[in-house]
Image 1 (cartoon, rainbow, N blue to C red):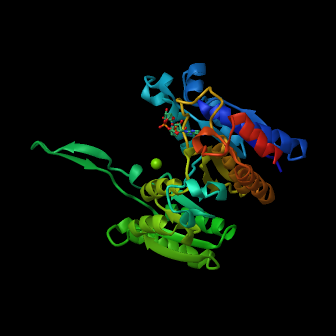
Image 2 (spheres, rainbow, N blue to C red):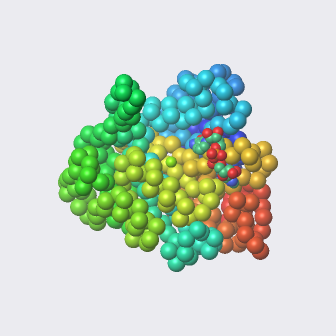
Image 3 (tube, rainbow, N blue to C red):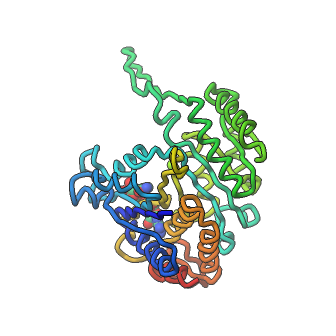
Length: 362
Ligand code: NAI
Ligand code: MG
């Protein structure tokens, strides 16, 4: 089977973090992994090269790849470029054309960092949950979406929450499939008590469960109560599936359970190909291009490396390799290696490259 990786390092610390992933790919290839890699430009670096946030040629490569690894885009240099070609437009185009409707945000608390979490140690220690957020529908996209002048000195802002059956079915399907590879438990969150789209969400998730995934444990929770439970006792969850808006907020809340932005990976998945069954996929750290530390060689590469671990797991079914990589990250943290963003007293402060090398060695 082909293993085509398309690398889009992007701007700022994106390329610095991607360099560490390239080391891992090289070592895996020396041991027969067989990854074919190509590299393209996205964001400000693509704009500088050809006036677009991503070129048509690179879009084609992204569409043809088995997985896209994305660094980060943006920076003050491009603050004033035209809106349609701003750096973020590259990422939005990728999400749209690859139809990446499922956004996966794990919240994992590495034991070595539990003590420095913003929450109590026993609440987060050993935490490993996954939030599955619907990414291409809901209130961020529904029409009408406008501000109307009511003519009496008043204006009206309108956004529209819309979900169709197929959108709920496919995101629920992703959540149930992923739960089977984890602890077999899905919690679906909506607001069926006040929203019609929430009533439908609840119905469709329940029906999908009954039809295809009855071996998985399913719970329903109102999204506001879910937010409270996520902070109170997050270990009660395994996979949380929710809509675009609630998922945006709940995944940011979950992020703060685990510490630095420099540690957080993500994946975005599309529909399975009709012939091959393979899903289009893009893997990226949650953080941005961090212009304040770019070029200094001090960025934390773990978010990018952990995103590659998700890629191994979800795009190539290389579960043992993904486990090994995640254990290597954990072991390097146990050994006291820290980039500046996660540094604490008595630990070994290392550069981006030293952190990457330590993980490769492990
Ligand atoms: P940011 O995530 O780039 O940085 C926020 C803070 O966290 C900064 O102090 C930064 O130094 C630190 N940080 C982030 N990642 C780190 C890492 N790996 N290691 C150590 N420290 C890290 O968010 P910010 O500052 O809001 O945005 C900067 C630029 O990035 C903007 O142009 C923004 O539009 C873009 N951005 C791009 C994203 C993407 O490509 N998906 C996502 C978020 C922002
Ligand atoms: Mg957000």
